[in-house]
Image (cartoon, rainbow, N blue to C red):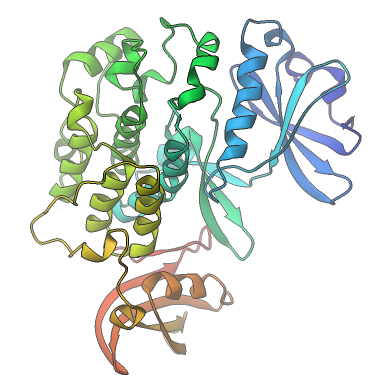
Length: 408
């Protein structure tokens, strides 16, 4: 099988570029193959993406592959896959060297069971950090879906969501005119179940709001295990996206917060002017539902979008949700106004250590650095040395080692 996917110069055991020893084929996409390799000089694993032999001669494929490498390299956020190198093999076949990730994509995870609302929002907000940086650089992903969101394991038994595959991204900045030849105006690019109406209609004016639609579909599937539009085949599915309302979230999952249903419904407005106009607005509303989220992540997303010159509308005033004044970009409240006290406990429930931090985010980061004997972190308000109300509880997942909000 490997011989059909790759040429001999990329076969297991071969050395690419004089330093990357190919170990195995670990991924097979439509036009490319992903290999696990070993960097012989740095003594560490890497992933190599290479175009399939039969696809190299297709018009635009090599150009699009090289464009993916350039675009991916421009996104420095930790939630985007790092690109280390791009080069050509002796045959002239291009390849891209990326960080090697261990873990599973969210499509594999949600196929087993839907995620708890808070876990789904946590994963989506991580992805939005990378998407925000892409949008600020004028890059629209156009193929956001659970299969392109990878839950990677990190040292210390923690995990992180990484956004994959900028191969069909669209550049909306001034240099986009130069790249129009890579995609025909009548070409529908993306995965139909996650494509916005304007993508399905092959509109030349697809912008960042198409990614917001896709993020809404992703969130819907993560919490329900189902898609918001029905169709027995691709034409019927596309017709549903273009002409029908999404299946109400509450009809599929009656226990979800009504605020989440409202957020997803806004993402899935067929008129893109009625959706969230940027990912910062979406992140603000998601953070209201997920009270375990530290304001720092949303502040960072808002800062990136704001510095790109985009206007960010105030959060939706959901009834009974948390006050989001602190989630807005600067001015940021002084640390003394947001001090918290964290109690770290072992499996027996005994407190291992109690510490004060300037934010929930700082308490969470400290938890990720503690030994495996610490399995619980209770974070409380703190005022002049007095412990206040419980803000959030994180527990270490037995399956992944990832610290997640405690499920109710």
